[in-house]
Image 1 (spheres, one colour):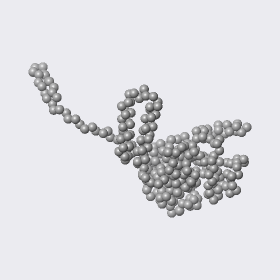
Image 2 (cartoon, rainbow, N blue to C red):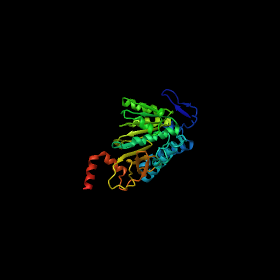
Image 3 (spheres, rainbow, N blue to C red):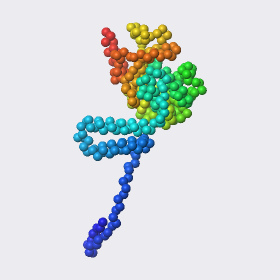
Length: 327
């Protein structure tokens, strides 16, 4: 390449510059939080990047695309990201919930190792604590690791856990005094590979803390059992599986096949979310004094997940409507 240079009192001069060599293309660095793509198979990363590049080229025409085309692109991205997430997960056997009817609702007949499971307890003595503790016992039997109990309310009763099948020497009891200590205890326990499961009750959970616990569970391949109040149903969650448990008061006209002479209580269990499963599945569990469980389907007039969430948000209005229907 040459350029002519001329000063006001001198004739024009021609300056020659060496030709610029073509530089090899540089791949853009991965954005923060894209460690999943780095650990994914090459074909999965290629599919994701090709889809993103095609989206960026058509960015100017995106507003003119029909909604169906946008939905197809999003569906393709979701499928490819699932492949990336599946490649990151270690190939290991799912952990049973300890209750066969619940395993039947899960896509892998159990919980993936290194995942969080939320139990939303509706009402007092809803049974979520017992069901979640049963899952922690199953995790101990699966891996042989310890079970960390994070008890801030000082309500944990060790003999009940021992009666459920958890050995006394497998229990590690922590009693944090502040919320910061609670989050730190859960985080550190989930990151420990010698821990089979972490069981704890927590109320309000910020998004950053929820994400922190989810990453900690993945790091230690530990199962996290989190008991949440009814208000948590309206909050976002990073849990792999969410259950809704509420105690049921049987009506006098209930079939005698559901209740037996030694029955203790009835629990309505609903699957709010599980990756790869159909949300909204529900069943009835009868727990007798010998901890025996009988599976019973909920009646057809049972509430959907959306109606139940509305009832939890406005309990007084729901009670008034129910009284009006009875009248």
